[in-house]
Image 1 (cartoon, rainbow, N blue to C red):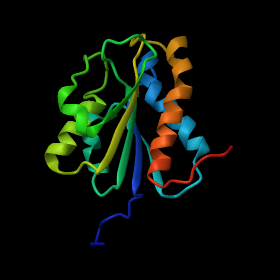
Image 2: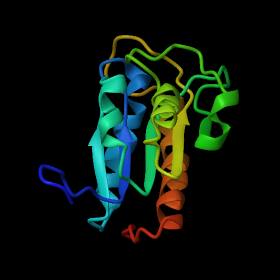
Image 3: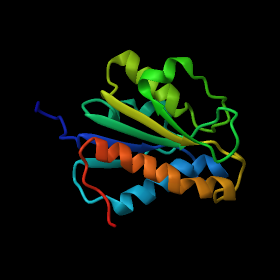
Image 4: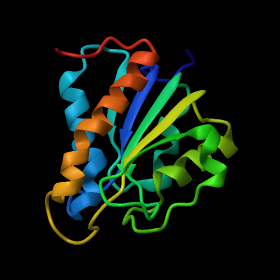
Length: 165
């Protein structure tokens, strides 16, 4: 470790979104759910809010990255998407997100810079509403359970002991 460098957890769980814009806050809600169940120091949980590309510096030096976000691909609201970094060049989400850049764009830039962890996945839920308001729509709130299960599967696959019951 060089002078001034910081020891990082090998796995980063990063949520992006804005809880003041209804379903755009789904990643942050999912982050809270996962953090409540985790029992390990090998995972860092980060609420990235709406920082967009300013989050790039948090990605380097990790073994695995899990990004949680509202992801709009024009599917029915509440659809849970699991996106592997290898598939991202073919995907183009619509720009219904209020933050500076989407999770997909963040991953693309990290790839270009050579800072994307080898094991990277985005778990996103198709939003029903991105409008001023606090709280998730019913259909998106109902999708949290599936998104959480898929997120925990990814973490377990990367040797994280996590769950309480």
